[in-house]
Image (cartoon, rainbow over all chains, first blue to last red; front, side, top):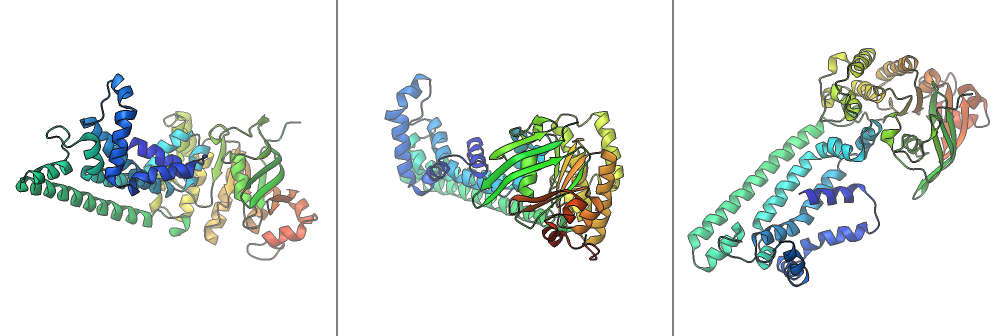
Length: 208
Length: 246
């Protein structure tokens, strides 16, 4: 989430050379098949960086850490896009006013931009989390599908289906569906509240 | 002779097809200058350059005798208010006004609170301090926005069409508040406007912008009698021309 916020803020507010390229690269995992992303991660954290990371005690391939890395990689572009929209919806003149009142750039981010983008960030976090819970392809390639070790809920469905444990697979699937429904319902409530507040937070002429 | 409070020397700024060029401008302590110009002539950009919200492409900005061309807005001590009041919607009127003091760690300072109470009373917003912006009228929001800009006690206040979105009675009331703030606080004010009445009632100086260049500047009467008379009158209306006229 922190990396998503940093990337999103930079893309929304800062002009830097190569911004278009960074933006495109960040979107790459969205259009790639998850299995292909997984293969790329497996090669990067295996033959390419595996030994260097192992020398500082980090093992990513076929470990629970791999689950975290794969889910982070697959969710980051999605979260960045949603957070960026939230930041872009904040009128930069609010930040200008805060600067003239004595706030430095980081203070403005914490005291103005984040509170004003809070609903968008909350929605983005919830959607990104829901997406990461269901992520399977890249996670399976990088972390493997090992019982009680790298067994995410999506992996549990796959494992139980493949050994004929239909009841367990259906139960886990139902839990995933209930989670998704809860997230979507929660977001609808959040959006409805946001729209209601936006109606009364318009420019000065909105209330004569 | 004391140096002017604010001096711009050959300031330039450009972005795509728009450019401000060769802006030379001088403002003394306690001046009330109105900045007039057609829409798109660069009034807001000029105010943002002075506040440090944009970096000039060329030229020098001197503020209180020092070169402030590259200093960030938080170090300039220049108050700023936009046409929309732009109150932080998640804070009460009181928290909005005290935002600057809190940003500097002075939110509980007795001197600041005494000044806060004085300003709130002078602007007639004592009853609405605890309301969120969405529960304030347009006039109340502009008063709170003005209080927020003047609380830090900056010697220069930049106002970007602060009365433009209000109806006439509220505009007149707030214009009187502005005159009172100028008199009471002794601040220099640079006020972008399209309104001839505001110019007539408030300004001691007039700066006219045309397509990113200063067409004319000086004492109000001097500008109105100068070579750009027709252009300026076209912006603010002829003398004695009724409501909104100069």
